[in-house]
Length: 234
Image 1 (cartoon, rainbow, N blue to C red):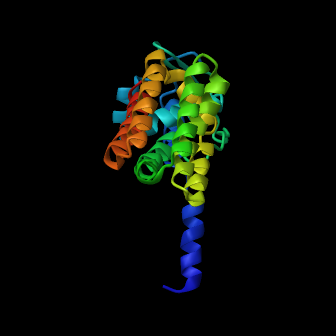
Image 2 (image 1 turned 45 degrees about the horizontal axis):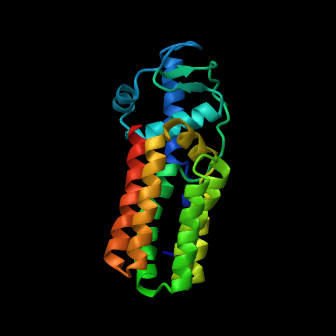
């Protein structure tokens, strides 16, 4: 394959629509074809996923994107309702990678970073991770402060490896948590999940402090898998 073709394929991959945007288009087409009126309820997520032949995770991302675009309204415990008659050119917010794409990458990358940190972390690096855990617990009820402490926790683990490239990767992945992520979290975050996150972080810290790479890898993966399950199932 020549260089020109390689560049062309790369450009095509970059501009390929995100899956959740493709699914969002299918939902809008269904609303139009079935003449679902403003204020009317859409079929359940299970039925929509079956009808459109998509996963629940992709469907949920698409519904949240449509909510951000003003097309639907997600009402907790009630369902999803059309909030306005969608038009063909309805602009959805550009949110970059979907939340489940980001979580998938984080499960792969951060689990290994935690394992490396467990092998090489110094006492001062472990103290920084502990500091972030304590900050999360202290600011449990304050969303902004809790988010900042959560970010610092994951970055502190990357810093504990002594590899600045890992820090850059974790920072990049965290910064992909855009409007779509935060709206999804707003709908499906629960107090139980928040409490479990604190427990998860303690487990990860303990494994790193014990210099147990296998336990650290397992604890980080379990944490991110649990978040994925919660956001995909509600």
